[in-house]
Length: 113
Length: 116
Image (tube, rainbow over all chains, first blue to last red; front, side):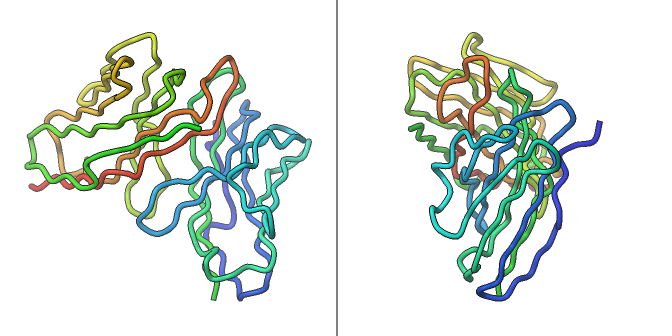
């Protein structure tokens, strides 16, 4: 059973470009969470999704950030018009529908130049 | 929403000694408390968790205790080894689990260094 997959592992974007981060949950997991981790800081919740539904996006900035988890394919976190402050590690986690334990992917390290 | 506080922020112990990390939470309805270990540049890894219907859980050298009255829970690592060196995060659900999952609120992390 493959773990949570994320790609790309590293992403470099210039200011103003778009960043797309992908996450494939563990098999059998229908819940996906995105967290952001700034250097030497903790994990901050961004958005919680189930298939075709955004359950809670209270941690995600209202502008430039969006997320989806389509019926087919990975979950995508999209950041438009990136700024230097978006540089961080973005982790995706997944959980089964009836239990709380979350398993993390390897993360995408976004660098905005 | 849930607020999780974690201390200490850094902890150094000699190899073979025990390490204890403590967290407090604010929502008395929270019922699930995981601990994650994160090595430098790696993903957070779930190492142990506890639900509110028990007071203690052990897995080899690690254990977690929960005091619901005081709203705090602790991670205990015995016989520490250099490979235990990492950042440890506690967490609690933003809303209590009730048959379905919820996002987690994380503590600020503890950098544990085990000195050989």
